[in-house]
Length: 134
Image (cartoon, one colour):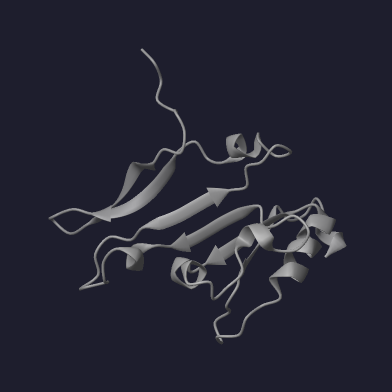
């Protein structure tokens, strides 16, 4: 993985893979840190909340850099589809307090109107003050 430095911006990995097996997240996070690439952890908040899995902050020597996941099932069932709830978090501590400024200022989401065509919704999430002051 050391040969990835400068070629890859990040490595994304789930704690539980598509076969239902638990990945060695400590080894993956440490390999990312050694290669100086961002580690992005894909999580299931229900498994974290029940203590069934390790928190991404505890992966390896320094934890995962970024956390993403789906949180719809925290509040409501997926009855006939419905809106999703994306979870996005960035490590923030005394040594890495400026990394939140490296995140996108705005996100664009997909939506559907009453007529049916898909559209892109600008401003689906504003993680920090990005509106121009006028």
